[in-house]
Length: 210
Image 1: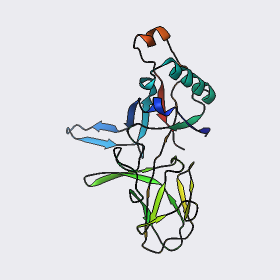
Image 2: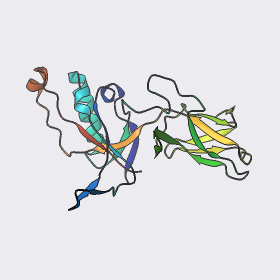
Image 3: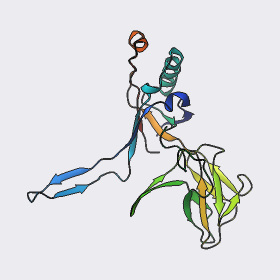
Image 4: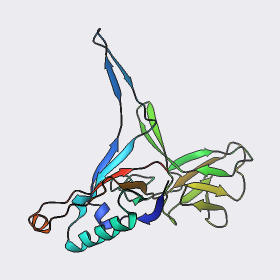
């Protein structure tokens, strides 16, 4: 799939609206009960970045970004204003935020993930677009240094440790991350007169699987 490793303007993104979407098929039975099933393994996020456009300069930036991505053709990075940290939004990432796995004495590669626990259930999201330079890693509680102790592929979210963790040693991480998205339209409809009067243009974005 065609993807550009470029970040949508952050100041516009952080004022957008959107969030996760699920797909659930529901069949009503004659007894009044329901059968519910989801064909999606995970959620898919969608956004309207138009709410973040506050100036003519923002519009110019959006037009240039849209043209360079050729509309819906190329995906790109987007900073979800509600979910871009391994920690709580109000906090700072720490190297023990998320459990990536447990050592077996041989494995050195671990995928970044984020857990969403609530009650007895939890959803595990694979993180493939971490922010370079933001990733903190610990093995058995000991902080690791990027470059010396581990390397990061910031296009896949894979962590490679220099030394395989001992059997039973937990591998944890903290990080910032982006959401891979694309434009969900092949046209931008911008009316400057309406914009000045307070009408926000619609700039739909939708998450893509990478």
